[in-house]
Length: 92
Image 1 (cartoon, rainbow, N blue to C red):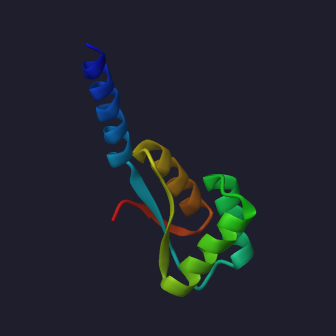
Image 2 (cartoon, rainbow, N blue to C red):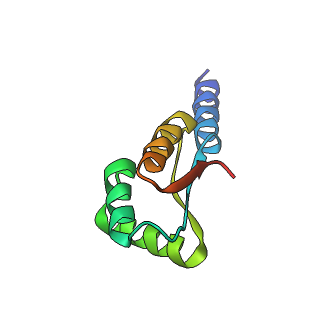
């Protein structure tokens, strides 16, 4: 009985990890570093250093995963980023 419970809990953890989606942010020639950093802090709940690093990755690589999580949460963040004039998608 105890082994079955542990196996069920492990299965739930594995499902939670594998169900994670990605929020990708794309580079553009319009938005400033400051605006992107501010959006990542406010919308994606990044700390300042994380937001700065993601912004640099987006700038130099053209895109970067800025958040992972449940699809519904990421879609709300994605829409908020789009509303701020950034280019973002969930998935890919």
